[in-house]
View 1 (cartoon, rainbow, N blue to C red):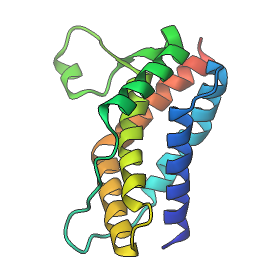
View 2 (view 1 turned 180 degrees about the vertical axis):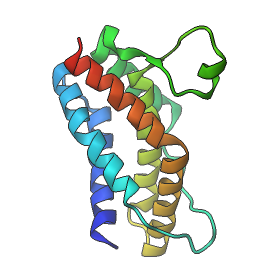
View 3 (view 1 turned 120 degrees about the horizontal axis):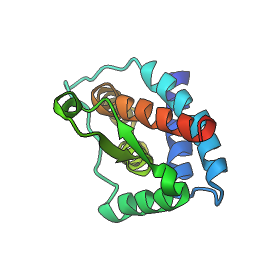
View 4 (view 1 turned 135 degrees about the vertical axis):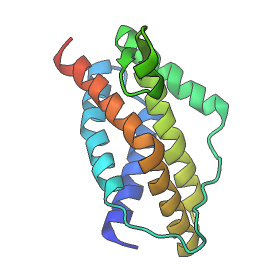
Length: 162
């Protein structure tokens, strides 16, 4: 396993811990996410893994209760600042009405992928870890990289433009 792959696993763990057990102060949470999300993006971007079988696999370990708990905790912590206008949705170019989304849901979406990844690789043989890294990297390019950037932009606005 490469140093970048190990770093990604550590960052995924740090991220999941941060969103499942957020601090009591929203400013501390925002500051932590503004430091963590860019590192996670860079490390995921630098994953260069291939699949032996053509597609990776991630266990579906996060249940709806944990997902909702993250959304509710982060949403309560963020309060009014949780909602922001989404400009990168495919439907937005056809809409005359702004589309709103929440920081809490975006962070929970990312957490779901990373939680499933961590559950898959925990105590797994290297071949399974390699397939899981391939799956999480594929999912990054197709889904959660844009979510991460959108949430980062919203958190930046909370921090510096409030």
